Length: 139
Image (tube, rainbow, N blue to C red; front, side, top):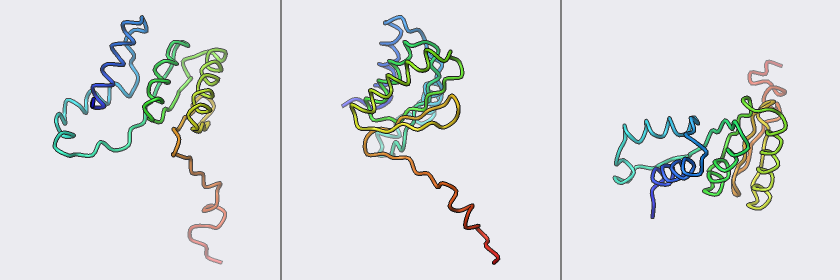
């Protein structure tokens, strides 16, 4: 079985071969730094913990990166600040197909930031319940 870092390196290399170029997504930079600092920790029984991919697509071709993370059941935060609205909508449509086919969920986090979650995961929203009741209710 392949480790998570081997899969990430393979995906990045495949993207370069397909002409998608080097991505400077936050996930790659953070994971490479962690892999260098903690090499071999997973082999010693250390838990890998929760992984969330953060992708800042610049073209529609970056939908491939989103799809590959999602197929591995990794939640993906998509930040569309660097894209025009038409291409961002195309990727949202693509992501909607992913979540429909894999029974996931999507949530808008801000005007141009969305998150897709794999099946078995869910978003918890408080809907202001703590604020309504008051944390230190003095009545």
